[in-house]
Image 1 (cartoon, rainbow, N blue to C red):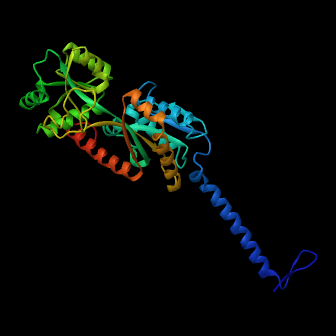
Image 2: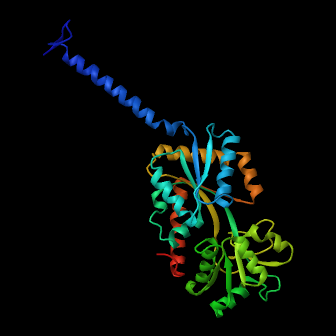
Length: 341
């Protein structure tokens, strides 16, 4: 055995106590370090939150991100800054790839996305998909509308679908970008009506505004877009609203649901929040807690009402299961329409 002598060298008799003290010291240092690493979960966020809108400014994802930024900070849910930035292109898949590659393990990085991204991943054969992110929550939805010009011969959705079934190519559908929510709705309606989705004559436009102009001019038989996109023209008597894609009647909208019209199709144009891959379970739960706290504020409820958004909160495992179901549904119908893998 060795012991510490006055000259500092180890002598017999004290080495055991020395080793015990040294071991306790190292254990304490390790525990302190571990607590420090886990503190983001307990006191989230530590530092500013950066929120990506994977689209150009002005669209739905950008609007949602900036609404979150405002409510999170003004309501006091978080004390840190929330910064929004845009990465546009390819239905959100460019932003998605950047988000995954640059931010692994960082709980302060969040991304807005939605149904359109599922279609874009499919139609663009994106090498990065949502399985490489961490699902946090769905937030909002907007319902789709099917309209025709007021002078159209089709008074009901049943009449329009009967003609669609009799001669699929004779009915042209005008909507937004290929693989987006509007085309997904047309494909699902074709499936439900017993029509090969590949036979649907869908004419893509760069956005709801162009699609609306095509319907008003008679360039297409029917138009598909968000309820709000057509509201003014419906009210003015220029367009006839045949059906909405909601699961129940929409307050203030004088039209049946697609389900009430006889076709089991419900399409919420939902938006949600994702975190990067590789974050801890504690951080995931902390982020969910922040989103739930934001959702419960009067400011967020006012935001939903002022934007005409429907509350669509799902979090954690419930949201992840919903994503899996939506992804499979979108992949199946777009594949049948000949889009993507």
